[in-house]
Image (cartoon, rainbow, N blue to C red):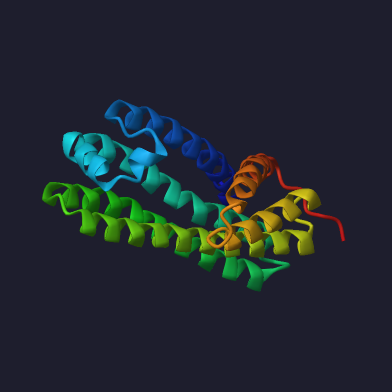
Amino acid sequence: MKLQKLGGYASIVLVCGLVVTVVISGLAYSHLGIASSAAQADPAKMMDAYEASPITFRALQPFGILLALTFVLIALALQERMQAKAPNLMRLAVIAASITSALILTLSIASTSGFASIARTKDISAYKAFDAMLSGGYATAMNAWGWALLLMGWAAIRTGALPRILGSLIFVYGIAQIFQFAIAQLEIVSGILFLISMVWLGVVLLRKHEPASA
C-alpha cells in the first residue's frame, strides 16, 4: 500500500476513532455513574470507578494506542507528497507529529496503569497530582500537533499539493491547536476544523495524486 493512501486511511481512522472513543467512553462512564463532568472531576468517585471496573478502563487503552500512530502516518504521507518542493517544512512537521505520537502513546498507557494503582491506595492527593501531570502532557501533545498542522498547511499552500482551501483549513486548525491550551474557547473551533480538515484530507490522499502544473 502506498504511503499516501496509508495516510488517507489514517486521517479517516483518526476521526472515526475519536468519535467511537467518545461514544464508548460515554456509555462506559454512564454505566459506572461518572458520566457527568462533575463526577469526572471528583477524585473519590473516579477512584471508586477504577477500583470497581479496572477492565473497563483497560479496554479503552487500545484506542489511544491506535490513534497515537495516526498522527505520524498522516505527516509521513504528506511528506511524501510535498517533500520535493517543501523538504524543510515537511521534515519539521514529521518531527512535531512524531513528538505528538510518542506523547499520546506514553500518556495513554501511563494513565490506565497509573490511575489503577492510585485507586487502590485511595490517595486523593496523588490522584490530583497525577491527573494534573496527564492534563499537562496531553496539552503538550496537542500543542506539538498544532505545530505539525501549521507546517503541513503552510507547505500545502506553498506547493499547491493540496486544494488551497484544505491547506488553509489545516493551517488555521494548527494555529487553533497551538493556542488552545491558553484559550479554552478554541476547543470548539479546533473540533470543527478537525472534523472538516481530516475527513477532507483523507479523501484527497486516497484519490490518485495528479501533480500540480508548473
